[in-house]
Length: 280
Length: 267
Image 1 (cartoon, each protein chain N blue to C red):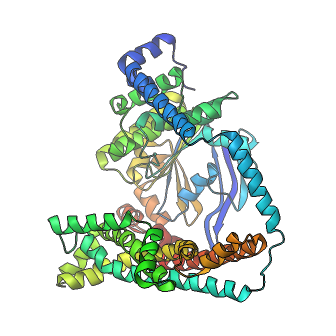
Image 2: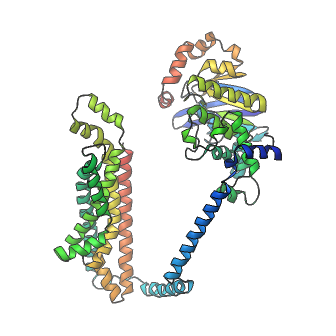
């Protein structure tokens, strides 16, 4: 049993190590001020946007009406259009992600600070990635619809442009985190730089890259559904049309199909990812 | 008194611990030796119930430990503190908080979980933790992150955490296998100190025979999951080691260090 410290002992420890017993008063005051400032800002934002319990409650009631109208879900008469749109969305997501993942590999190597580029060249490339990343695929879709016309091509290009920069950044980070000893082993065997990358770096990063691309495919299947709303092809067009004419039962059918599709892709990609990473 | 009755643990076809029976009176310092893969770690981990036995029983002062669940199991774990080879400190928490982790299951009252969640430890608990750290010359590092400490210091923090649990037993699983000779001595001295001064029973897995002889009252040798020697250090002569393991003491220690656990267990 440990002896319970007496008051004098506690006081002695407190005198010796005041910080072990909590923050000093000034720090506490600063923390309290910062916390109340944040809360005040939060309250102000709620007031500014007129977010009140009453409005949320009324909104929930409206949502309830829509849900009632959705039951039972119905495929409607044009159900072949729905299936076609869904297939188009998945294809758009796959093509866009695939192209982005392929193009991102060389970009990732260029962006990694331990590989080809150094100094200002790498710095500016990374800033270009950052710039592209700042724009969502929906914005790209709006632009591409004007540029190449309505349809899936605009969607594929939108997904590609939005993701290539993000994937390149993630790949660059994966490449920066490779274990140097393995590369050293290859170099010590007399391999030139390109072959040291091929045999020392690539085996370490390839499974990570594939796993990340699979994640993006899954998430892009969801985004692709939205892209159709602005005219970039896929299920989104079907969805927005039915919302406009208030065919809520058909909307429900589309939503269920979308959830099932995403779940199936999630399941498959999780299994694939586990095999890729686990096999290492 | 800690009693193991025919304790067995199988992993598939491999029997890691094979019908081990052992009685450890309170206050003893027991060294458990054996090659890696001999079942020493599994044995200690079963006592703390980090691993479940396949069969057999663990008794402490007549109480059946193998049957404990929920809060009773957590209480048992608090009273038999574990020390790990890799220290198992939370690297990103400061040393003081790591030591206070030893108090978590000692805190009582309806609000104890909530105050623990918010890291609201009392001045009394903080003083206890500082006193424990002071004992191992670590009080000046109290507010540093655990990861900034050397291995020897981290292991002493782990012992301070164990002390705050106010345990009856300390189970040390290869506590010095990751340390250099000087730090090994400091850590073993600390373990012997808590054994002598606080009267805490210590079960310590070691692969260095001389360390076991120097620090322990009693040595238990294991081979392929079974106890093959149990007696005072003086009885474990080099001749006896050769008789048990079929190799000289130097060769034994060489093997204990170099053979990965998986290979021996599978052999």
